[in-house]
Image (cartoon, rainbow, N blue to C red; front, side):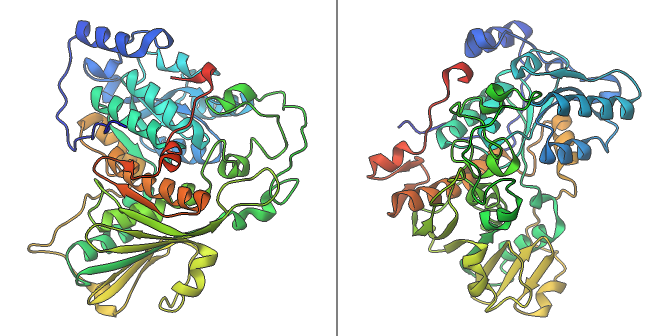
Length: 458
């Protein structure tokens, strides 16, 4: 496998000529993507320097993301694409009312959206299997990208996205919004500046499928009984690059999208992206990752849902730091031995002089003085953002790197993928983070890629 091109940080943007841009895009995209020139290439995107956006996916997470963007008057959605006609219409009506006019156009074909020259950026909050294909297409079309986590169902897709983003000088914001929370920033600054001494090990844990047992509408692990497709759902589009299966009641739901292997790796990636991202941030490891993985895990024995159900993976960095990555049921007895307050997710850094743990409820420390540190002098300060979507809009304008850049997304996503491979193969994985290859395991290496269904292949 050839080593994929790395994404450079803070890449200066050079404005191509109209002729060179159209020529390069046309050659790269082929017949599936007509040559187009986004408005952002040639100057201000819209009146008053407004950023024009398109939304892909306006279910639960997509609604949260777009609502957050819409709190800012210098950003506006002009297009919405969703597999459900009812969701498209609801989003259009909501946003047109907010904007005070008939501004939003509905689409059932994502490629038509990307042909629009007045769209500067996209928000991708679809099921996981569509994240990277849409992001690749958006990068080819010259659009900046806000993409939800996890990044991809196949690492090879992510590496291709990296190439397209670099080639087209695109801004990417990954949806690991904990980086835009001051508690997580504070914990990572304590670690980076040595307030807990030399980092020795990390615990990282998150929710697993068991938190949603009662939410499946028909069956604990999802119904396998075929039923008719809802009248307002484009099921072929929903499946997209993944295999086209029979429709069942639990397939095109948040639970199916999270826990069916055709579309996702499960919460080992979908939830795991958050604590793993913070572990990487605290270690200053956004351009690398662990080199060896071993552990155990389990898969459901029946039903529609077939992603990793539980896991206990030990990850080893080249510098000697070890990380234990766990589902929350595995983590609880281990973590509550030292944490006074339990939560079903979190990241704990253990150093030679203490520990700091952080989750969405706040920071816990081995000694109270660690909660009272005032950074200054030679302390290293991390990128500061207090609003993830605002940071994205600002970076679309400034062309600066976002707080959750693509390279960080790829590297934390890699940990989820390799942990999942350990569970599925039942053997350790040796990883070269420089060449991004699994060493001496051809069968496991093949699991880093998936075929795309030809109709929707890029």
